[in-house]
Image (cartoon, rainbow, N blue to C red):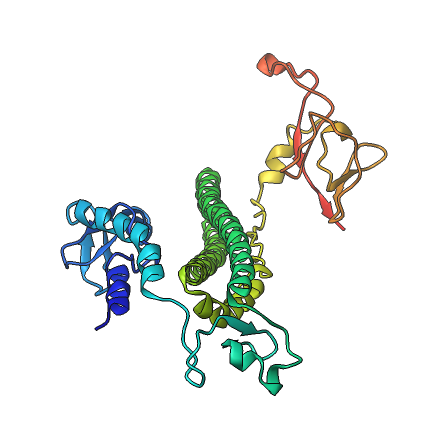
Length: 361
């Protein structure tokens, strides 16, 4: 095995198999494999204490089986610092087999490395032949630019993944709240309404399951996209450290993949919910009915208030309304113009009501 292969083996031994980068805060598990501590933490599902080893699928207890490996961390740092110098010292310009001269030129038309005698051959006479170092310098600039944009892409995907995780948590909280509300209301009603309660709970759970499946699917997709970006970043970093000849011959495919990946945008996922009617609730609430008008200054931009301020209608096209600090931005809500200050002893003064959209267009 030559020295170059030894360097590659050394690099592999200090690389995390999850993020494909040099170890950061490495830990060794009971099966003997090592990973970045942060990467291994991401393999956990929720708050579970155990997970499977990404290498051999052996069980890992995150509370007892993780041992910090400081020696591996130090070796990783040293290898990362030394590798560019070692590779530069071991390799140099290749030699032309036909003329025995150093190959220091590059033909952009044929995309191949040439020596001086080869560049004078008839087949290259009208071609664009430049010094290899100059071509490599230009190629390195393109690769570094691609690396910069790929890093931004990774950050955006990570932000989108964090958003999906937070949205999934909100979805779960909302579903649990809705379930508790439905159960509480139906418990106050007679036994004859139990069947309807169970039907609506089942529908809500199905919607919740459907929403969770969408978020989980998007979470997996974003994780895969991030992994592809990380893999491409590693490929870009490898090209940066290569010799000029290796770089100019291998960078085209990497740049093409980078360009394709940069144009991919994550899918926007939103949950679907149905407002479940509670039987007899309308009749109960009608006993507290008061004639009120709506306050248009509080209406969401998707809610159109009628001229008589008695009804509201939903529109998918947002209205161009002036800014108002009382206007609801994120919720489809409009408030009543009246307010109430007391409900004791039948007192009912200026009721202020909160209402949702009543019809759709």
